[in-house]
Image (cartoon, rainbow, N blue to C red; front, side):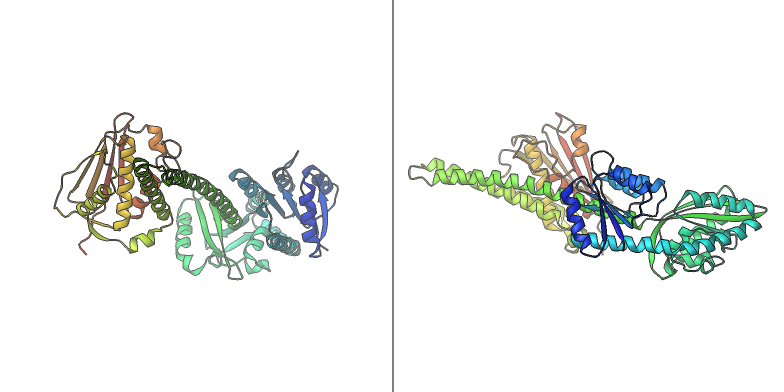
Length: 503
């Protein structure tokens, strides 16, 4: 019966995990600290899988897995944490954790992880016989070339990664046990003596072989090659991603090439899990920020409507209530537009793009501002032009882009400043320049201007989404944006649109 050790300093969690796993027929042992688990393992007690919390009083789960890695014990360790972060994820990868799971732990997930961990351990245990065969082969090769095998043995003893050596004819002459595990060869001779091409997929063959040929063409002992996220082929025709380091050297007049191969599949999965956790945290920030803005607007609307609804309310109060309601409604509309933009992909926006007249689009946006009484206290300077300045874009996206810039300019001038708008076309590009004489921005603000929810406005007067949305739009349509600003000297936003092809 497979024996599983659960390490957690919280008794309730230990008991909960035990109840889930014991129902599946596993023998469960409990430890309330990492130090207790290390003592039991050091005393000779064996386990099939360990499930350990990361944050515990005394030694942490990272300390425990480091001990397992340093002792080179074939024991899959599943790390569980209620506070996933990049540091713990990196440590988990460094010390070869089998899995990295965020709390609360899902029953189906933990059972699946334990099953895979047991399969991996059983597979490694069953490969001991293959290892003995591999060692016999190494001994035979050592007789032929003692120095070569000493170097290989040193590498084999220092790493759990696959280590494969080929000769100048691209024939595999040596491989460690990890190589057979990684590429799933049941018989060593199915790998030894074969062409290195059996490790590559057909569609990647030419690319990787050209890289290998480059190493072969260099002078021995001086050539190295690093390949990241290379797609390699197992004997069962499945593929995996790996990082590869290749070096060359000469022995007794012959040239050999040794590659160290590291399977990065688990690392990729852990990074994806970490990104998923960060996305959840990001959504929490979104909900809190947007909820705050909506509540502010609704509170203002409700308060003035209630006052205007009283029997003794005069016309002035009702007019003010109407204006507040319109202003707050417009604020919510702008907020909604920015939120909807966050969900638009590059594909969806470009599919709706067409050739527009920049001057006409500017006029349309300004007309909307005029009709809604926006910027009514700002002085807008713009020379009307009938010239056609072509840009390829989506009309709604352009309106959202320019509206955010104009509203920011109005806020920067306290709604009483001057905003200049100019547009022109040179031989290559179309240009839009928006300048204001407002308070300007410091270098610190410019460095953070595109960060979501970063704002210099007072609480309740900005969501920090405006420039984040602007950045998303210019990136989607490959527009260059140059910003010039200094504290007390206003700001200049220069948009450079890509050339519109004649077709």
